[in-house]
Image (cartoon, rainbow, N blue to C red; front, side):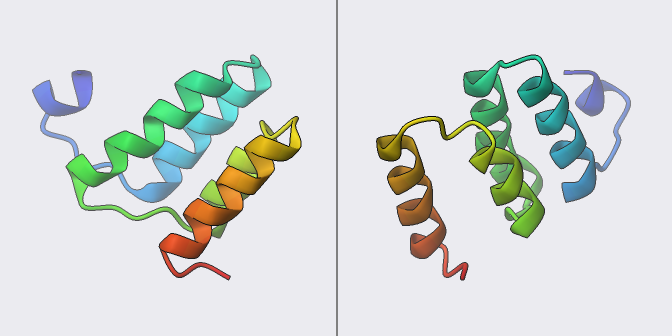
Length: 76
């Protein structure tokens, strides 16, 4: 990944913008993969992250899973 080779320290806003781009292209699974990368940089999802993920919740089961994940992390 270019971030590591250039020794950059991205913040949560960088990842949120990247996720938003994937959502705009309707690549929901790619956007979800970005959330898994947050732990590699000691970042936690914020309210904007969850809002972006909510754009991809087209079914009730997706929305329910998203709400459970938010609850597990203590988000309200």
